[in-house]
Picture 1 (tube, rainbow, N blue to C red):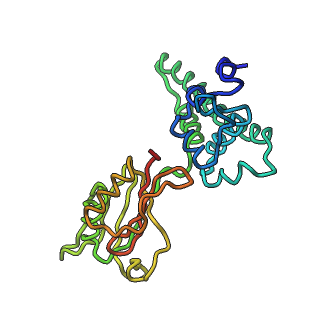
Picture 2 (picture 1 turned 30 degrees about the horizontal axis):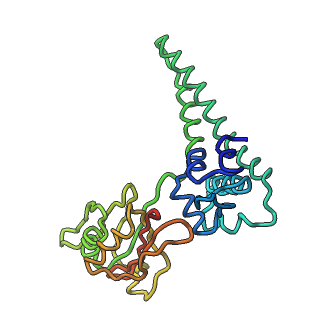
Picture 3 (picture 1 turned 180 degrees about the vertical axis):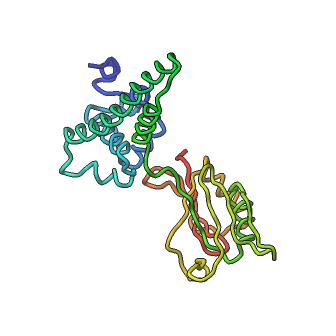
Length: 265
């Protein structure tokens, strides 16, 4: 048995488990608070102790996250009667094998082209094969751009930059001064502003929303304080959500809903 397990009566303290798995102590505590991963017991000093069943459950959480499931979905999947460790390991292995196979082929082709460089010649076919493998290792969808409709594009551009701290990009105007296109950035994510017109209405005109924009920030509470200080219309106070984030909601002057979330403290 592992030395850590022996030293704690057949279990792992939270610090030991964090060190062995790479999962932070804060994350393990959050999993405990939300019921995703409750330690099997405690030491005499009150420290959390994780047993063998906890280790399997933690693997399930991490594997499901690796396969693209959100924490909110994982919570229901963990206790499903159809759960099978072997099936999960098989699926995880297949996913890993695909990644390894593509990386192995790419490494072999890079070695080959490096040898060609030593002889002073590089065949275009080799470069084409490398680019093909690179493409296979990358997702088809590379990025997203959010497009939001506003009656007053210029006012929205200013408001979103000053109130939410978005990075302002260009604001395009016609010769008569009317704004027809605006851009902002949230990190690497682009947000474009589109004017109202035939077939395009802002939430304020429609009287409701059918979508929301969600942005990650370092500290949701600090960001909330910033927007409150600028008079924003808060629709939901900062709340620790069961899917693992601290989040709050705000409505902009034309009715668009924005949610900002950050890690749980």
